Length: 421
Image (cartoon, rainbow, N blue to C red):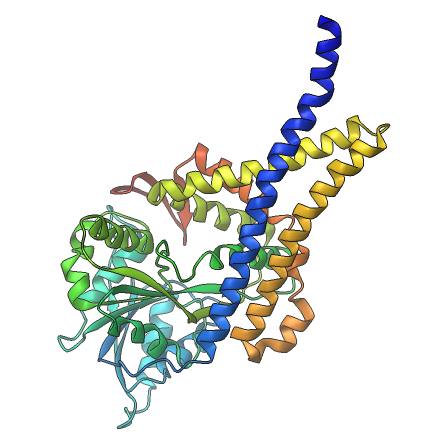
């Protein structure tokens, strides 16, 4: 009896484990697909609505370093927002940065402000810091140049292209006193190379996590907050004093205030998704992706653990399923069941990924030709994304060191950074 029991266990136990994992993963994938349709409906509904008429004087602070592809196009877009009056503050770490001379020259060439479109500009040099990230240090320097009349602070990145209605769309939700932070996110458009297309598939899988719910996070390339709330939360003094991540720190400030029963939430505005397009090597993409997940591990550990569990479930289920198919190759019925389960899970993932192509066409109609040509990468490369993610999450479990714009950092805790130049 014992040998027979051992044979039964060896035969059926792995299949039983696989079926349990496959059911869990299928349920997770089905829920994710439903969430994808919700995201698409939110985007379409948002595109049909006017931004709103809450347009107080605001200060837009943008850190800059180096001359990224699209530098001129992006700067022009930030200078030409469909907004009556705002201040654009550009902050660099040093005057020897190539961005400084380019920005200085461009600002000198600006035409005088029109009566219906007054844009005030400032260029500040932040210097170096040994206790925080260079980007955050630039933002803190930019805050010192904000005019007293500003009621809203807006933060953006110069490596993305905003639409002309980006600023009014980002500021308008702050008319609701219950909204503390309004945010968008980046949306990578596929380039010509494999790495840039894989990055587009990888990053948009994160973008679609945002929505009409209470667990949104702020993204530093497109976020706004009232000046009064920024001061009340002591963001500059408490949360940006020694950090690399401006957006995770701001997210934590809002959530900790809410935990103390203070009102406020982070509102995602689909109209404020900004497009990025940049060619990349596979090595550069993996380094960039690893940095995103290392930042998540340090500054949002709960989200990191949830992501690690999700991708372990996905990849573990597929490894076990493929092993069973190979092992049971002479048991056709069992192999077909396992293969069918894996096929259903893959199909659910591909269907959701195809929604991202639909979303991209809805948000960026001017990119229709490029998306018709390369937009299939959002779903054709979807099956690779979980495996890349697992590599990123495992890497993040092994190191807290990152390199960002030529500067190396050791992230010792959410409140302690070691700058390793």
